[in-house]
Image 1 (cartoon, rainbow, N blue to C red):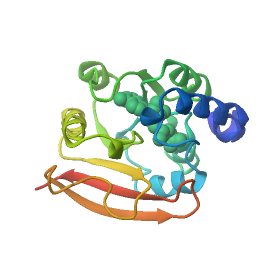
Image 2 (cartoon, rainbow, N blue to C red):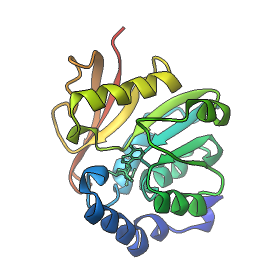
Image 3 (spheres, rainbow, N blue to C red):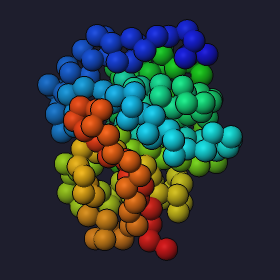
Length: 198
Ligand SMILES: C[S@@+](CC[C@H](N)C(=O)[O-])C[C@H]1O[C@@H](n2cnc3c(N)ncnc32)[C@H](O)[C@@H]1O
């Protein structure tokens, strides 16, 4: 299992930090942060995912796998996890460090829904690591539509570096709930759950 065979170093150590930072230099808007998320933030996200369920957990914008590692360490089986990452080098990094998870190198705004359904017919949780805040409402709506296609009605967990809602949820016809906040991340971060208004 990845948690036993690979140390934290692979995810938050020099190599991962280096890869992350290089990507940030190339495309700061796509990365949204200079460094990977902290283990504390990962644990706060993991707390809101059912451990005993068989449903798949889809992480959009998995980066170097910092949140993924926390999910697995919190007791979520790696075989339940599907990692979606747009940057090929990062997708390769994820594949080699999480051999039991499934990795899809793809654009979360244009998901290969059939392929994803085949990989994970029953998705219970979607996590978003993509810096949606930096995008306009049109793109945010496009993202929400993609999540609805793969996991209707479930919404998504979203972490961002604001205390107030990072998304204009009323305009986007979403319900919003802030689940957690931590100063133990750079930058300090909140975890939100957004889902379609009932
Ligand atoms: C803030 S980083 C989060 C990385 C990791 N989850 C973490 O918490 O350390 C955002 C990640 O989303 C990826 N990303 C950005 N746009 C994307 C898209 N359209 N589709 C898939 N991944 C995307 C970036 O390449 C980057 O790895």
